[in-house]
Image (tube, rainbow, N blue to C red; front, side):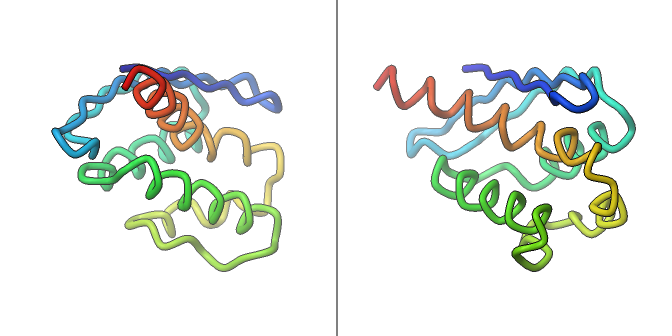
Length: 115
C-alpha cells in the first residue's frame, strides 16, 4: 500500500510504499522524497525505526510529534528524532518534519479500509 503527503508551508512532498506482515506491522518501506533537507532527514529518521510499528504506533507518534512541534510536549520517543530537533524553531519546516508520519498514516489507513 502507499500514501503521500505534502507540506503546505514549503511544498515538499513524500510518497511512501509500505509492506505489512501478517499482524499488520510495517515490514518494508520505500520512499520517494522531493523535500528540503529537513524533510529528507525526517523521512530517513522515520524509515530507520518504522519496521515493526503498527497503525496505532504511528498514530501515537504522529500526535506526539504534533504536540512537540506546537510546544505542548517533550521530544517524541522516536529513535534519532533528536537529529532534527533544531528545526523545531522554524515553524515553516514543521510540515516537512511531519511528512513521513502523514504519508505512513495515509498508507496504513488505506490498508485498514481494504481489510
